[in-house]
Length: 349
Image (cartoon, rainbow, N blue to C red; front, side, top):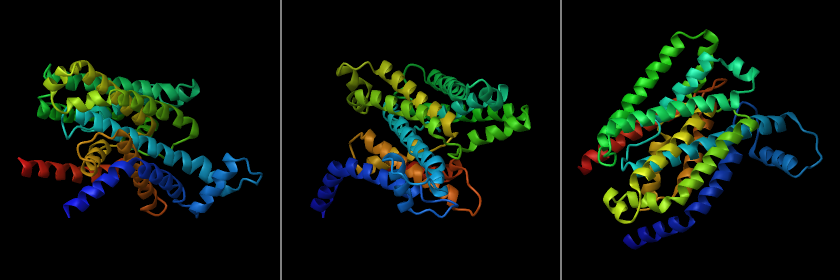
């Protein structure tokens, strides 16, 4: 039985990435077929052939629904799930905190507050009039995320690696603080601004467009590439700051750089699809259960993207003629998973 278990783990180790990428493609094609309109996955493949290979056929209503509405939506879900999962995995590693997550760490709430400030003070109409929607919201979200990271790090002092509990509690406190400030901004804002901000507070992929995919895709890919360049140093930090120092790694600088990259990823995704929590907490733990002792960011991103794609499918198909916010579903699943982790750590202790 032990040999069979080791054999199965070895197969997963070598075939995990190809299988993960294949399942990503499968999920994209299948997810685009779910919705109010009666569309099959074969219709999705046909529409892709028409648009990608220039087949001279009339573009019907189904083709427009698939290309203009559903594909941008599922691709944004893939990008968001992958980015949040990778950010969560890096945060858990560099802080050696298994409960670290962009949401619990306060980064997501800070980014949401920055986006709320931009929307309430300037308004969606003003941003659209001057063509600043694509950059105004990400900048506001990035400032808010950076402020949350600064507050959390200042609460931990110089010994960030050892103060796990303080970092987690600081992140939760910062999350509540920015949530309260966002509510205060909404209280004094106009009804139109409050309706716009509701999208950011609950999380949704309903407003996904092809043009809106460019910035989050570019940020997630570039930040992930930088993280992969320092993957060996990040893995060394799992063994402790002293061990990493002996290997010639500037631990403080590396930790700060990774926190900045995670903040950039989270802020960009919050500006694109709102605050979605607990994805960065769950997916890295699932990957570590399947691939113990490894830090596979590619697999983490693939599984996170797949998870978010199917959560979005549930969000728009669970209720008839009504769509649930994605953030509500991930919060329900993630809170249960969070309690499970706490219970497991209690039993280990």
